[in-house]
Length: 404
Image (cartoon, rainbow, N blue to C red; front, side, top):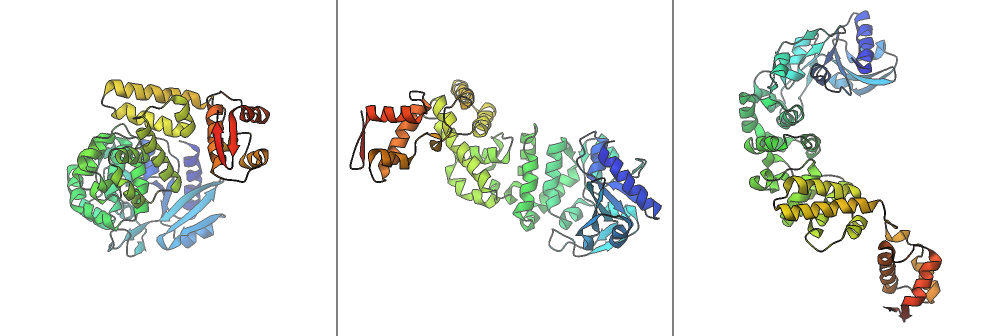
């Protein structure tokens, strides 16, 4: 067990010493059984939030009304949540009310999937009332109890089912898939931000096409922002390892859906990344050289587009030429004399003073010419040499430049 579990054992022992139960619960139990990396642990207890705060020296209230207190132990934060049962979910997102209980099984019963409804004590003995361990062994995802009820409670669980299928490479039980299909319209009640978190986790898996078929066949895709604008056929015919890669190649094929990208509520930085990837895909259909591409696009954009073409290219000769150009571009990225126009060792103010001219479009034109000369190593990026080159090659009259 890793250090997080050792820290968790200390918390559980302290709870036990005060007469309370304490168990590891949820994803950390699932992942340790699967021998996956555990990045955080959760503990469940019959101690009330006020008890937790009085027992431990350093606590943070992150949801006392729902029973959750963060306990800081050995400088590591750990969520400690009181056993609870939940009322109806009238909005298909969150319980109308939460009631604390002193029964572990009652708490596990409210959870989404059997593989997340297991608990372990400090000696790592398993409490598994819903056969989650058996489902792990069978690589099967199924809900705790009636799947229609679980998805009625929180519609996001439908998308989480697809996410776990992708991450763990599990199958989904037939009755759970049927309920996902029946209840997928409830996803309209889920905030875009919550959907986006799950969508990001779906990508980057080797089984992405299988997962995409699940999104389509259950109707989940119809309830996803932006993805709902893509035809099922186009969606299934693209392989992408990230949501931004998916968006870029779909916009490349169907530019009219770009205006729908805002529905995803992604950051401006990611929107810029998608815009640049789409632009590069279009650039590759024109006569371009590696130096120019490496100057116009970041290595991240070039590398991502290269991968998209490798896994989606159809015409072998055309695909191979594009891939080689992108490989050359990545190599050139390390050799560029300048990365952007402002790297040129002369600026607009200096040009105005040198020519004794007022500002105007000529400055941008001249900087563009200098940029090209320096980029292709026909001119060294040195002020004196730039001025000397200007003297030999440039004439200017009343704001108009002429290059000899």
